[in-house]
Image (tube, rainbow, N blue to C red; front, side, top):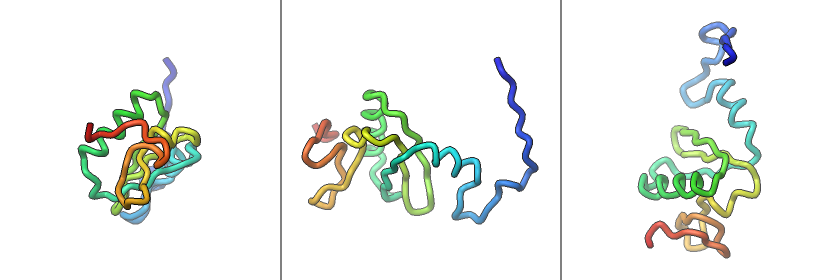
Length: 104
């Protein structure tokens, strides 16, 4: 097992409340695509979407900002993640290829 030490001083990563620390931005930068959901999205819908993504082995990270939930992921996995359709509602998957309906 490798030991790692944090070598930055306390406060180096502190920013305003509405900003993420640099190390968190770095982690988020590892992904090449994001889905931005409103912060008040149904927890049932978010749970169903994340469980579906886990089941489909999508590599993702979930970030929470003041007014939105962000699912960072790699391009090509969009079919397994939420998207906003022409009916202005959130669904899991792309509009022309819905793989999962949490209402079923």
